[in-house]
Length: 557
Image (cartoon, rainbow, N blue to C red; front, side, top):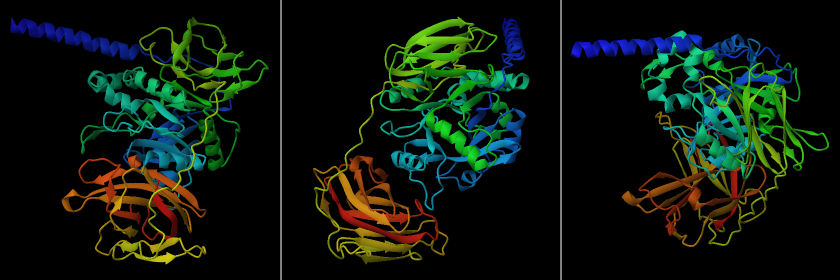
């Protein structure tokens, strides 16, 4: 009996394997012979090289990209920032390599591109990091927001460019038990089919994206998060999927305003500008190329509003150019809800009249086949008759002042660093306290180095929301504001960074925004604090950093 059951099992298993092999071999990308217009650039986003935890070199990455017909790749190696990746922008193998970084923050990971590399380390606070990139005219995307290991946790942030609505690496981990069981076999016979089977409809990511777009402008992006290896354990990894294999799965189609820039920085700036505008769409390239696709809003006066743009009002039409020789399903969503569905469309142009204002985005799927539920093309929103948002008011000092008299601060530092208090700071105001410093690691090889203005005095804080102060510096630099509560084994420390520039600026940091460094979990709205530090260390500066930083009107609000 057992032998018979075993034979039946082997037979069924064999049939199942044959079905897997057959489905792998029979999968083919849909044919689309339309040329890609010169004002569209096709590329991929979110890659890791051996500058961090990826397997390959940038030369290998660009060689693979060229073999797949890509125009650009966006490198996002880990770091705040990754200095090698940030400086890597170049033409390699006729592919535009755009250097960028994936920041590891308290709230999760943020991919950023188009920033200026500062002389200091980017902050670990999400809103601060987003603001830094935004000030430079760069773009930032929340990476793998629902990843099981490193999810995004701060949904109160604003001002970022968008969100990874589909991440191939996150999808692979999410569908690990189902998709990965037969992945090696499928990959052996058809890598495109194997990797596409890992993708499922990103419903939760879409809900988050739509929620953010009710209050602002945020764009969705398809991410590879490609490492050219599959990590099995801390010390064991398999050397697949290759960069080239993942490049065939998810692509970006970016519409540039200027074409033909010969120097890499200018060409990269054109791509980054389009990402910042939201003038791009996402494609599951393994299903079919999307060459020839267009989506825009045509106002009543004939003016065209591109994806990511603002239209003055309804009364116009959403236009789709669909020059494909296969039928597609088109779903138009308004404010995250289905507005219009067109099934099995074969028309070369589709016109959807718009009678109400809102946020309109679209999903185009293949009308048949195993992957018809996947969003083959995902457009970015068009914002029709959206009201403007108001800026937040500045905080006002209304609590006890900490820095209005001499000797309230003292210098603390590691042995090799140098630091000194300079009152007035040459600004002619007696209320200004400055710190002149040079950071140096100690010769014993310990990685920590620091200088600080320390205020060690118990201060009641009940009834106040946080710290407020004005600051300036001899050059842009990052500094920590740290406070501690309790003493001995009961001590807890909390910290938040801020930017000081050559111009005086007010900084207000609520207690609720501070990150706990150590100590028992507790409230960040303390009744009293026992010490306050303005601190520059190896967490926000490099060895040899030097300069002056000034403070005035330090207190609570």
